[in-house]
Amino acid sequence: MNRNAWRRTAAVARKEFLHILRDTRSLVLALALPLVLLLFFGYALSLDVDRIPTLVYDQDGSPQSRTLVERFRGSRFFDILGQVDGYGEIERRIDRGEVLLGVVIGDDYSSDLAQVRPAQVQLLLDGSDSNTASIALGYAESVVQLHGLELLAEARNLKAGRTRAAAVEPRLRVWYNESLESRNYIVPGLIAVILMIIASLLTSLTIAREWESGTMEQLLSTPVRPFELALGKLSAYFVLGLADTLIAIGAGTLIFGVPLRGSLLFLFATSCVFTFGALSWGILISAVTRSQLLASQVGMVTSFLPAFLLSGFVYAIENMPAVIQVVTHIVPARYFVAMLKGIFLKGVGPAVLWTELFFLAVYGVVVFAATTRKLRQKLA
Amino acid sequence: MKAVEVDNLTKRFGQFVAVDQVSLSVEQGEIFGFLGPNGAGKSTTIRILCGLLSPTSGRATVNGFDVAAQSEQVKQNIGYMSQKFSLYDDLAVEENIEFFGGIYGVPAAEREERKRYVMRMAGLEDKGGMPTRLLPGGWKQRLALGCAVLHRPPILFLDEPTSGVDPIARREFWDLIYQFSEAGQTVFVTTHYMEEAEYCHRLALMYRGKVIALGTPQELKRQAGLPSMEQVFVEMIEREEAGA
Picture 1: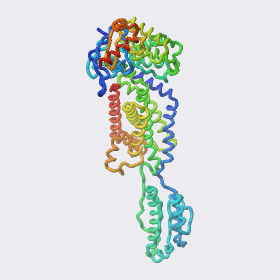
Picture 2: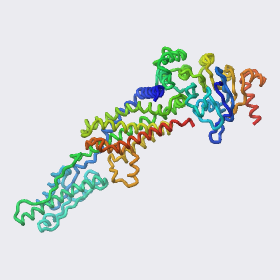
Picture 3: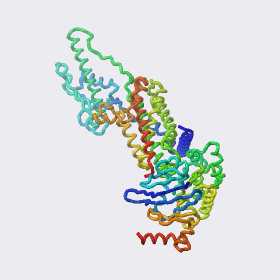
Picture 4: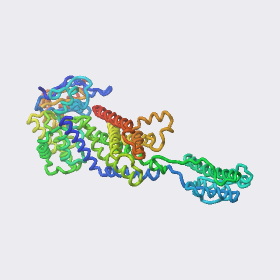
């Protein structure tokens, strides 16, 4: 870049920065939004299922059936709200949404066990939220099965005269998110969603505003080149984007206690590459629509929805239909989410994540080039 | 070399012919007026000359540079003021001047002096820190003109620069135009105020995309045998209507 090109770019960046500073409301919004979104999603969007509200209908009332109830009571996944004496109350309270699970033990439970017949336990579930219901069902089944196995082993030991049972017991070791907390998994991905929304929203107005106020026509009559205009605008918003990145990373680790196992420097470098692409996307939208209203709507739809739904941030990409899986490859947030999870939870670096970083860089350059091209077009 | 040379210039938007085979030339240092009713094609012609629109056919040069092929050089040599007020409302007076100084590439050594010149010219010496949106219309207009001449362009294009400004501010604005002209700068100005037409060295009357009359105000009045520009204007357009 020669001296004049540099001077023009700097003039645009400085002017754009003044716009940002003068518009106090947007500035506050831009800096507060990441925190608000992070708190909002971080606390509200929990995929953990525990303390399942449960009612017990024990028709048998025997020591054996009470032992089974005690097994449920002893698990942290169930919260026994009470015992009832009929199906009516279970049904009513499931209808009202107060109870998720009903455990019904038949009146022949202890006699079946005594006569070595399969004893049956009925589990009633509110399946209207299928995801929660299937997780709850899994927990309930394993409580019942485990108890069944214990009874079986006890019976065999009694017969053989042994006191200790031989059984296969799994020893579990979960890697990367030892406590299996969904928050550790959600918060890093959330940073990608937040940055995408903010970056696109911030910049989507910038060119459209110039078109609407007539200043774009003035700029086109000056020697400033499209590349310089786009770069100048981008660099002003880049400062804001980096501030947002720091806020999001800080809140994620300090407020939510998400472990940051990888390099902070690499995390920051990655965020810069992603922010560059997201800001370019916003500027491109602005240049194409030339209207602030349209630009902000298009910006929201094209940034928020793909970043939220197609990035693998909560919804696993492997579970999507093949066509959608292909589509996710053009969503930049997909690569960033993968990198964030890798850096935060697995502590991996460029050696593992270079392909993702490469795609993010390519995306940024392509979108920026498209923006420059679009700005080169004349008035009509 | 002529300041502006236009040869058979045509601009179509779909079926609509906005500029229809216009030819004219403007001498250096001349104040050249473009007169005509709204929609006559004045602004479109100016926008082509500033490199904002591409011509459909025909040729035009500004300070010797072809507007279609050498738009970068054209932009280095012109100052343009569009119909719509086009400074940044949320920036202070000085910040607007500094911004345009930057994108016009005014050398660092001259920037301070040029800024003071523009503020003096616009009568805003003590209002540098004032937000531009608070300025009254006439001041805004002069500030916009000042920003367009920061880099001392040889040619100035002013598209209805005085619309919506009171008569005294208009008169002061024209004093500035005369100063530029005396300093050797060419001024290409569109207007629909008849008394402003009288101030121009030469005039082109534009109607429905065509130049229907061209000459000094005196020549045009003599040709039509009428005493005022307003009568000449109406007469010429009626003649054109009858002919069409």
